[in-house]
Image: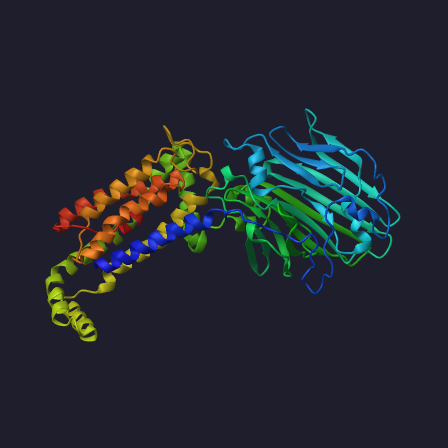
Length: 536
């Protein structure tokens, strides 16, 4: 393969890794200002929803009953996983993991939660007080040790009667929530039910975290980065679910009505929080809104059971069609070896075996190119001032010798989607979260704490570069190629150790393959090449 092709593939791989690294890292915290009152931009909604505070209590209409009543909290679930529901506004104040594969629950909450969840607001001025009413506990089902499995809260005044039922489903990391309204006067035009997320997360958790807001609807999916929400954003398509997502966790609100077809709005609340709301249009005095709040890992098996379309939060990029089979194979290996590090090694070997015919074809094409390289060099010298004639003469020479330039490039580009898909799987799959390999690598989703694997990767890529034949002698290109192993190694310093492990094993196997192919094809004299083949 021509040196320029190696250069192009190498640069593409480097750009991909750089893009993933810098795009996946959170934006640096800057000065942010958010208006206290924002007008809704949708033509259907003409006022901002009420903030969840007592300020709505004095609005035109009723005064919340029991305004001075003591606030009670109910813990739904168990000590290891529970939702904390407050009688003040009926919202979820917190979701607690005691621990998830080494990550404390408070850290998970700050990644994808923060603030009150399942709060009810409305843009109708006379109904603003609904965001701050005190509910009564009408029914409760105890579990054990002070925790409960189900609770019912009610509120009633001369304007409305509200019943809210909460049922915990810990195996699916979710809380089912049924809201029933019975309005005794003209109801509000819209009811907002929403989630809140922190605009910024603690500095120690920002590495490789990119938090997003999803709105999944019948026509597709809209995605925003949390830190970018500085104004009201409306989506009027019929929604299925929406939520906040980090790399490994999801806080989602799923509409289970099938007929209400909610819309969506997100807005900044202040300098520290962002809200995301499902918007329900109220057309009758009585309305039931069944919801499910999911707060848990982005595990495909669990997401498929928790709600339709939730798996869309697991985004493996353009080549998802390859990513799912690769993830399935990774899990299959893990089932037998019980170590995801070993499973990654076995998956790497499998991919190398399956792509070996393409690699061999590329090497044979490179050998053909080496054979006619002296003639190509003479043509470049002869027609150095006439590029058009040079290209024409080179093409004729290649055809005369039975060489097709695409025969060398095509195998590499066929392998690139597999590499990108595997990269995305190893970068974002929850299966590697908190999973140890051996020795100093205690978490395959975190960077190598001592940078051993990135350093070894650079060394292996340099050796592979020396073994891979080259057909170009441009000193500038050679110097550039000499830098590629170092560039790859530097990029891998901050990326998950599971991904670095794959790259390292891939390079070692590629060196072995290259040695035997050089021997069988009679290829030698390699000086420099690209690290791109190490990537695929």
